[in-house]
Length: 626
Ligand code: SAT
Ligand code: MN
Image 1 (cartoon, rainbow, N blue to C red):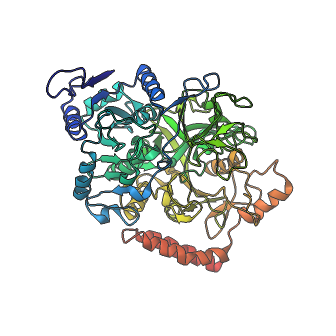
Image 2 (image 1 turned 60 degrees about the vertical axis):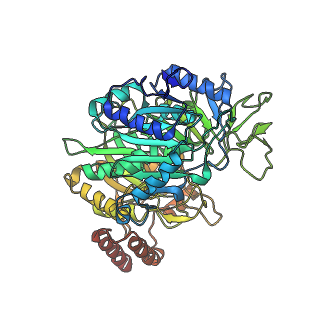
Image 3 (image 1 turned 135 degrees about the horizontal axis):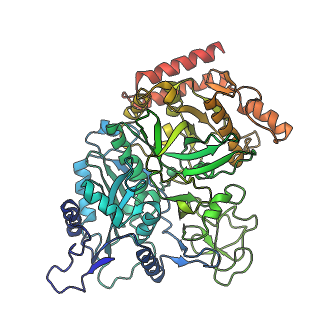
């Protein structure tokens, strides 16, 4: 570990980056430039060692940011409770500062890069007074993979450092690769809460009024101010791996997508890989870790949130998971919904904004442990909620925040695919797009071809969730589950998808599918059982790839032919309801949707390829003649 503190030195300007474990001029100059702006008391170059991790955690326990939870239940694990104003991604304060408004497109908040930098430089100036500046070199993807990318995050949050340690390949080895390449994404992050001499710190410093998550795609920079939570602050995740990487991918012929990656082994042993795009909090982690309800089928996890995909020399599309950990939604995670996630949470976890049992508690979880909605049918008692206040089952608010999270190393999941870190990536045979839709969208629809699949991805919509600040449950269009994560104009993004479809032979392209697990009946209950039963849909998809399952043509696309979707073991009444409601296309209600879809495509601006409107016209015609 290399920390230089003001106290240790007796020169005029005591803080230097002199203890840096690198001789790379680009790195040193950049860090030094920011040290001058941020004015920290100390600079710490992160080496990514377990000792460093332990020391930072112990310091956070001492500072009150972390509570060590019962080591008998979760060794080496901690609970953090955030400032109640800092609990989710803030889309309103997230900006794409591309050279022109048009380059950012109508779905992004655009700011002029020069003006935004000027404003932010004022905010960053002196922002780390009284704090340590951590230099966090990291790699997104397996170290040395030709698909991986590198970054350095400057931050004054030790909470961010330890989360980055779990979520990325962080430290000395990443720095060596950065030195060799001379290239890295520049990520600057401050909580925006400097401390005056002698001022006491708070457990979760942040500056909600001045929050600003800024992306400069042309220069591959991220400047994030004022938040310490999730995707606002762990800059390797949405900021880099999606917003900046989507721009890199467009420029260089690859794809950066909001997708899980799973490996599925059918009874015949021929393993296939599927990527699936769903908005935040729509079950990507559960799907990636599912335990199939149908015998003889096995699912393994490659990634649960982000996929980077590139064509191999053989013309196939290969995917890596750029992350090294899971930053999963805790509430709802249970033995029923995701037993593999619970098994992954054996230890070395960071829990944020879940509920906890006080030190003197007894009962099911015992003292000093964590709890969230659905973890057990009966909540433990006594229980402290995510505000740290006493909570009763008849309270009118949840015990865990709906966007409470666990951070855990991916390797700890018992279902992790042995090849999950293969630098080559895994060959993708199918891509699914799915939203959270109570009505209309069938359980599964196969696209007629790539272009039709791109159309289905572009008209995806979903109910909003607690992963982002704002209203929950409102339907919004969320093309490719990338609405909050595209680093450039959505029309160009769709055009890029079309270009990808021309980059290899049609037989080598993944097949595209549209799915929806979230249809509700008139009593507002989910119709489809979901979770392990989603394996039935995966099975149909694999059989379509292999050419063994039947499909029927509908105006929307190819739906499972009667009896081709395996519904064995589901009770007869539900089977009938599934056939009648989830595996049909209702031409009348879809005809009513057409004007809305047209308006949606128009609102995406004048860079939306003509082909999308042609697809809409064809859909309209098919519906009229159905
Ligand atoms: O907060 S994150 O962006 O990391 C999680 C999510 O919304 O998917
Ligand atoms: Mn996500």
